[in-house]
Every structure is written in structure tokens, then in C-alpha cells.
Image 1 (tube, one colour):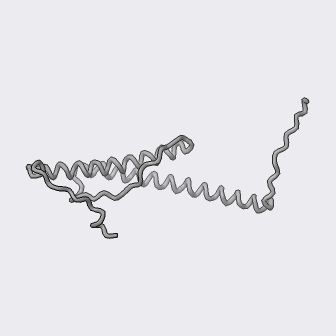
Image 2 (cartoon, helix red, strand yellow; image 1 turned 135 degrees about the vertical axis):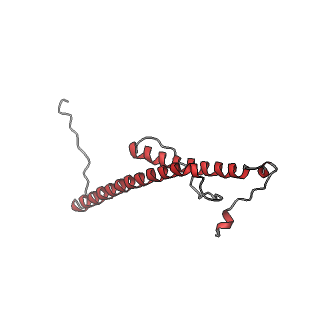
Image 3 (cartoon, rainbow, N blue to C red; image 1 turned 180 degrees about the horizontal axis):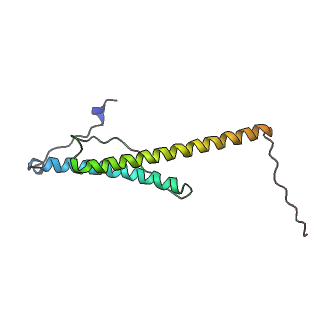
Length: 127
């Protein structure tokens, strides 16, 4: 599917024709996109800290269609979010690697015992 199929069509209003209106709208769109990226990073950071807690999944992410370059005052925020993404990516990679090694070990144990698992047997010696 072409990228033009994903673009949203918006109509210009009289307010959009005011000086700076399109720049303000573009700035808001960039801020919203950064908010969404930051929300995703926060979600992953919390999941890494406490994977057992009940984390509500986020909606699937779609690349926003943004006009023009990122506004200069948002560049530092975008860089900081990217750095947090990279840290989260490295942490997730370590978790996946550790989980894969544990799974491989469990598979070796299962093969070594021929898949025989004996149920636990408990005796009440006080009865």
C-alpha cells in the first residue's frame, strides 16, 4: 500500500489562513507524536521494572504523517526520548536473551529426564 493511502486529508479553515496558524498546528502535531512515543517508552520502562503487574496494552502505533521538519524547540525532547528508547531496547534485549537461555536450559532438563515428571508426593507424618 502506498504511503499516500495513509495520509489524512484535512481542509483548511479561515483560522488556518491566519499568520502562524499552520506553524502552530504543525507544532501541535509534532508535540502529539512525541507524547505518543514517550508514552510507549514509559510503558516499556514500567514493564521492565515490574513485569508481573497488570499493564494495560497500548493501541498499535502508526507512523504519524507530519509536515515539515521538527520544530527547533522540540529537538531536545525528541533526542531525550530516543535515548530512553535505546536504553529500553537494550534492557528488553537482555530480558529476551535471559528468557531464551532459561527456556533452552529447561528443554535440556526435559530431554535429560526423558520428559518424565513425577508428581510431588506429600506424607502427613503426624496423622
